[in-house]
Image (cartoon, rainbow, N blue to C red; front, side, top):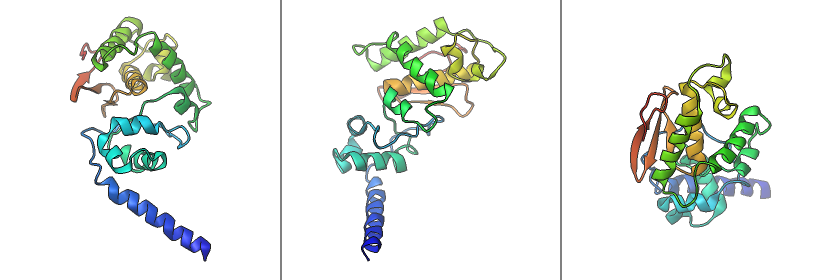
Length: 204
């Protein structure tokens, strides 16, 4: 009987989360191409609440409720959280080369930006670094299509530029997406969306 009651209570909790989620209206964003399997243990709940006033108004500082909102609704709504080393190291594929190079990319990012910069200045600094330090072209394997190209000083194609730019923005907590072509991005700065195509010369 106790197990049955617990199942009912769990179901009611999920339904209550689902119902109030519609009170926290979706932000104006597009679904992201690259997502992260963030665990509740490493979910930056305070960052999520501070980033979205509508979510905080519903859930307050309840870390578990904030995580459930992000997992079941926020990801699909295009909501983001800042990606950190803890988040990357908690991934199911944390031992993969891609995750390792993303962790390395966080150290690279620290040489590009600082906390005194505005979001607009950070985007400009990232774009300037990518334009100056990444060579366009193919290295003959899949690295050219991913962040592993730039992080190993290999020639990189449009897909690699796009993935790298989106990752840098995720690490900065700046809303950005990779377009469905996988070759270009959009970034949101001060509430406005801008196109980004670094090898194509389209800079924010």
